[in-house]
Image (cartoon, rainbow, N blue to C red; front, side, top):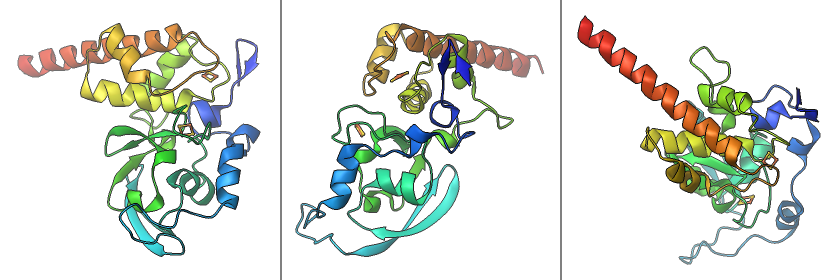
Length: 220
Ligand code: FES
Ligand code: FES
């Protein structure tokens, strides 16, 4: 899609409509290096992780999911390479940029900080699990478009998830709350203002909707 003269990757930014978009399939150099490097020998409590393959059962985008994977493998590569959820991006792969963030039991967590074993028994939502009631874009995704908050789109899946996590725990955030709520994710393109505007606008609309719904209920 063309946005402000720039080709925006919808697979990355707003869903998964263009799964062949090249950046979505290009792992970061750090991720490649990690795949080539030996896995850590232990998980920090003395249990060897290398070579242990386990069944991992978790809820992914509201669906029960089961995969077999090496316990110490990166959850980020598991999501992208095995489960083909390439809306979750690879940036630094060193816990700095936040573009790999997913919702993990409703909390915003960097997927590159999780192992495959960490997924077992938990709920994970990626950008592919975010949608409106009828299955199209969510109100927050629409607001990002309305406010011109998307440029290259690479950080946008994580920004949307960060905004969603914030609005679920704080439906009426101040602009400072929004800044803090989005601080995990770095955007290389924008000045953040449009992104903050989009989240603030969504908060206002959701609150107005909740007020109307409350009034209708009390009138019945
Ligand atoms: S890829 Fe940068 S924090 Fe995970
Ligand atoms: S829109 Fe390009 S990195 Fe955020």
